[in-house]
Every structure is written in C-alpha cells, then in structure tokens.
Image 1: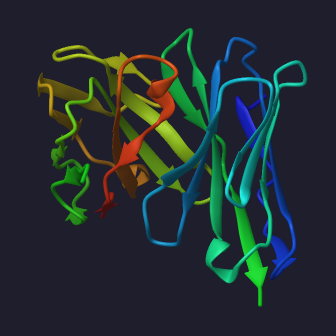
Image 2 (image 1 turned 180 degrees about the vertical axis):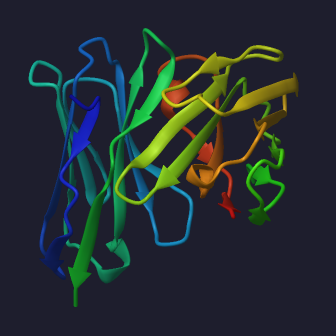
Amino acid sequence: QKEVEQNSGPLSVPEGAIASLNCTYSDRGSQSFFWYRQYSGKSPELIMFIYSNGDKEDGRFTAQLNKASQYVSLLIRDSQPSDSATYLCAVNQTSYDKVIFGPGTSLSVIP
Amino acid sequence: DVKVTQSSRYLVKRTGEKVFLECVQDMDHENMFWYRQDPGLGLRLIYFSYDVKMKEKGDIPEGYSVSREKKERFSLILESASTNQTSMYLCASSLLAAPNTGELFFGEGSRLTVL
C-alpha cells in the first residue's frame, strides 16, 4: 500500500465549478497535511495546510481533514483556468520527520 | 523574498560519472530535503537533513549520498550516475519544528539526463 494516495486524474471541470481533490494516507501517526500546486515545468508551491480535523478555508480553497478515515481533501470553488495544474497532497509523518507526497492529481479547468 | 537556489537547471552526464547537485537556502531553515520527480511516480524523498552534518535516508537513497557541511547548503551526490537516475531533482527546505516541517520551499529543480 502506498503511503499517500491520490486519484491521478486528469480531472476536468468547467470554469466556475467546484473542483474536489482527494487524498488518503496510511500512517495513523501523521499530524500535518499539506496541499501543493505545481504548474507544468515549475516547482511545487504550498497553497494550504491543515492540522486539525474539520475544514479550513482560505479564499476559494477549503481543506478538509478526517483523521479517523485518514482522508484529506481540497475543494476549489469558482474554479478558474489559472487553477489548471497538478495538485500534490503531502503528509508529515511526524514520527519520522519525513514529508511524503502523493503522486498528484492533474486538474484542468475548461473555459 | 525567501529563496532556495539549485546550482544547475539542466545537466547532461555520462553513465559512471560522479554528479554533484548543489542547493543553497537563505531562510535559515534547519530542514533540507532532496526529492526526485518522475512522471507517474510523483515526488520521492531521497535524503533529508535536520541539522548540519546530519542526514537521514528517505525512501529511495540507493545510489545517492548527501553532504551538509553548512546550514544553508545541502548537496546531493551521485557517485556513479546511471541511466535510471535521469530525473528532475528538487531541493526543498523548511523549519525544524513540526508541524512546520511540511511547509516546504522548493528550488527550481535540476533536470539531470544520464546518457
């Protein structure tokens, strides 16, 4: 079993719709969770982090964490073509101080 | 503005050559990481370091070594490059204390081709 899993996509949504990106992780000791956005040919950049169960909102982005289900998601409201990128879920395995990434989900927002 | 700088954006090397990839950060971060990124496999952790002269193996350390002589500099070494090490290499840094450990700042990447 992979440590961090994501649907590889590609996920296509129309402009203005809600994009939903999902991630599951295997290490129950994980404490902190991150979403990175990576444009083609560029390095990943951090867009959201969440440490506690529940929702965390930042502008058009909402991160959701359910530690019991070992599940974290990212919602992008009012999707824009500029949101087209690969979204990487990352988990800090605190017991090992390692940061492990999922394979990423490719999102395409269609004008 | 925070910055992680990787010395080479593109390298072409021959099988068996020794390869050095350099990374420097100016944020006084304790943690530094080396990942490789391959299509379909995502980012895989090679080595990381949380202090000068300290190093920890990641998930795929075989064929690689690292050096951290100064806090701001973390080098990845391929002792004898092989074609399966052709990849994009990404350096990152973060603060030491969890949960900040996962808030990584990445360099622009070094694309290595081994012929």
